[in-house]
Figure 1 (cartoon, rainbow, N blue to C red):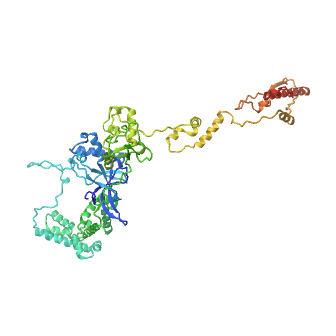
Figure 2 (cartoon, one colour):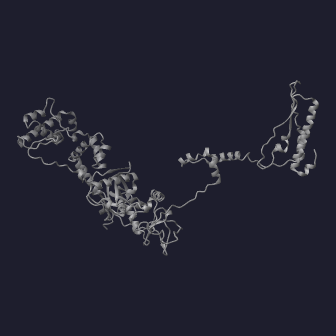
Figure 3 (cartoon, rainbow, N blue to C red):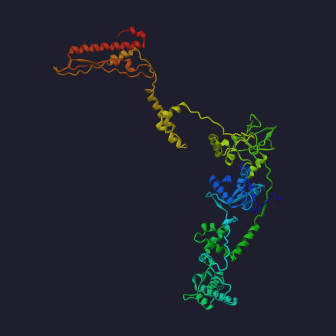
Length: 632
């Protein structure tokens, strides 16, 4: 009954996920909602796994500084297992509050401020015991030392000088030492001192009556007299007596100078009503954290002024009234709540039937059956092969599992009992880690946070992720070489999340492929019969060549026949001749004459016509050997 009863101020475990470790919280309030449920307002604590690696390095540096100053067990005296488990006991306090359902409470624990005078092994010897020494701010991601730490160590102790011998002079600088403000061996009696203090109070009351701002704050005479009777007036009166060598007449004349009576005010009088309201609001939010109060609410006030006002404010009726209201409000709130033991099965349990392992990590219809039942089936933490209950742990594709004892340790402390292989190499590097390939592989596994397969054998191997093969098509390989300017592999590798315009690359590759392989492919055309070709030549006779006429002269060169430059164009893609080859146009003779007679011109025309017919007949015979016997 007492174990399931939770009260305000208890440190408890909260469960927000069936597979993640418990949350550690401190109950600040227990409130009943409109639906009848109970919610707990809690203070958040964070584990090492919840903060960044940079802050973890700062925490380790802070811990080393504490070890150097203390005379307790240092980290070098601990084993690797103790170092590993000690990290699970360290928490970080925060100023963050949240509300959680009280039904998510899973048990009690104990959290204490790190005591620098005791050994850290004492936290490992106790179950459900944690410690903290730093405060974590989740909004700005910073770590600060707790304000309430016990200042133990040589740097917090006063340096006591040696006692001076008789006749030896004090060589210390007197200006840096304390200032004497009162001499108990004064010539005045206690009665005379009390009479002088009454005069000082009367002068203070009269000064407040003359001051306009004071008359507004203390409108009645008894309020002014009460303000004049505060400590600030008495301190000023006693200081005046000491400075005038306890001469009453001289001290009284100083209380009432030529400008009027002296008015002494403390922080209680200097603060306005709005500033007092801000202070009460800040005190309700931050408590006695005066640095945060000054930073967020009263930045124009000094830290000394805020602290002085706090202790004066505690003597007022306002403080007494607020204390009574809080006490009455606390009476109406819940002080404790009963939460029964949570007995529902965990979804991560691995069901067993007929002695065979069932579904792992909730994968329905799949069964994890390794070739060797003992290989890869041991507990990931303690290497045990037998347990009354197994729990799936880690990513589903890893198919790792924990025994019942290690699962409870994982839920409470947020880690495994035994350090993994990667963590062992960090704590105590082995000779095998000298191999750069092994070291890089292990560091990559550690950075990815992947579980390490522990089979109980000395050579436990890292269980890698599920392998995959990226197949590259031939089109992609060719495009990398042909479309280098558009693809820009180096720039694309620097921006892996920017998509590549594969449509533009495909279009450019098609154009470049057509240029490299020749003219674009054309569809196969049907051959025309010979009669159509002869009819086309009759309808479209060849044009007569232009003859340039010039006057005969002695310098005129003789007539020359020049053949046109043959057209050596390549064959088409199909391996056949083109249109110009079929029609014999590359064999046409062009006659160039400077000066010829009509008879010669007629002879040349007949020769050209005859040559055209020969070419045509030869081309026709190449199409069909049967037509070679036909004549034009």
